[in-house]
Image (cartoon, rainbow over all chains, first blue to last red; front, side, top):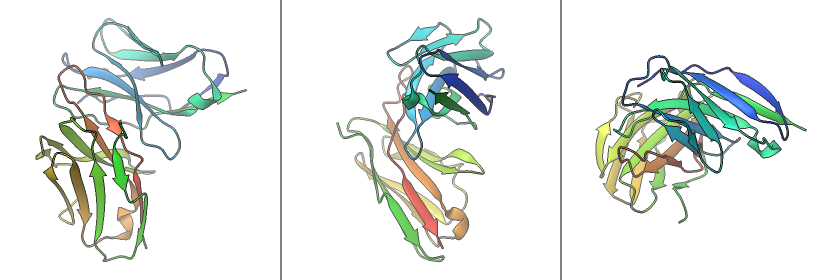
Length: 109
Length: 115
């Protein structure tokens, strides 16, 4: 499984875009990039995942570099409720994900 | 769907006691995972099952930990005997586990405190 590196913390103003980077230089060709977030005292929540192409859903956008060594999660209009720990992780088709330390995103008014 | 259901929500026990954590996955999901979260080590995968069969238990810390999945709708994680260092939040998660769709759905967790 890919080893991921994320900044320990980031700040964002409410209403602005939050761009969370992740380095996954050891990711293999068949590993998807997944993003989850964890709001205090709750279980992690799935956000988005992708393999090579950029992806967008109702929660966020995922930009994956062409060499797949890094990706960026974009929350287009951050709200106070987006304050959470964001995890980037790599996974194969065998149903196993491992989580790093994540990024603590604080959205402030 | 009610989502992944874990019980109890909180468990306080004394060192040496047996602890059993329970999980009901989302109906139709064929993968079930047990994770442990601590401040020091973050979120660690302990074991996962596919179609009720344990596939990888390499994350189970030691023989005091055991997990079972007797049927598709129920799993247990047992610690016997428990120790203070086992204090953590234990999460259960389930997924459809296909090659494309591997979204994990987590339960609310069990906060375990071993005194």
